[in-house]
Length: 424
Ligand code: ADP
Image 1: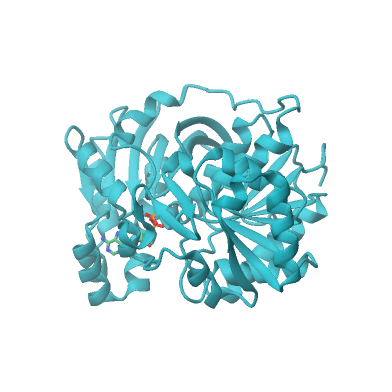
Image 2: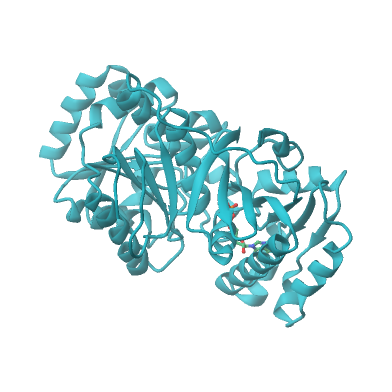
């Protein structure tokens, strides 16, 4: 293992779309940024300012999420990273058991630290925090589409209440009045809060300027946690005077085929699927057929055979909340999710073998399944398509693969139709 430069930030992301999202932010700030899929085994030559380790731990059993997250943290610290950033979703996707709380607890202990902040605000995508409550656009989290998420339904917008049952630490909230009073006020507030025995603070932020104040106030805290908004604040604070060292991966025109594979059931993705189907062909992956043992993957590939080309085609399990609920009650929540992820991953793998070299994957868990199935272990960051979604590139034996890993709620309605123009 050779390191050409010291890591300025080591980031652990709990899903793959989140990893490319946050890596896109650091890359845009001019830092040389690489995404590694899982903790690397064996020697690896890396030359980066920021390394993001992408894990698929959001819905793993908490003990497994902790084990993998600590392995990632140790790997990053061994490469000299003094700052650790734990990246989770801007809608704070988690369950009563975790995994945000358990991972924070384990990381704090490993870093011999007793305090961190949790600030998932991402104003560019409409995620803001006020008085400890997370908003998605104009509505509280629990009134957004996230209340019906297939795996991590979010039914409370108050993040102190959401996080408290997940962590050993006492949780409190730092309100906007303190944040808008400036860095000194926030630091004084944090000193008092620590002295009062609190271990995690949810911090309000409704605009990028708030996140810069928060990042500056806590820049020297060994662990920071949040979504991409705080990462942007941190990049602004830490990197504004540094020369750019990021170079975009070369666009070698792939001339290959294009496809979209969608396993996200978010409101945004349902809209994007409907928009794409207006002018493009799509194959619906039916959960009942998968459960009945039908060879849905072969059927999908047979359907694709004479349709593959530069005009993108769509494979989707994306469904409305009623259909998702019906599948979950027939087959179980975990089982339904796994069947879909596995089928979409196998479809994506075969599509690449058949010459697809530009691929959009929608859904965090879905992206994790696809990227793992493709055996990719490193991603370079390319152009931004929409806030939170860059094109990324991976070298495969068959040549260069361009991927866009789209988190469920991100992207405009025409994302699946327009994203291709942004590769260059
Ligand atoms: P998002 O980024 O929107 O959260 P994910 O891919 O992380 O999307 O999660 C969506 C989950 O829902 C996945 O586990 C996926 O396999 C599952 N899923 C997709 N389609 C269906 C369906 N029709 N019925 C039940 N579960 C589904």
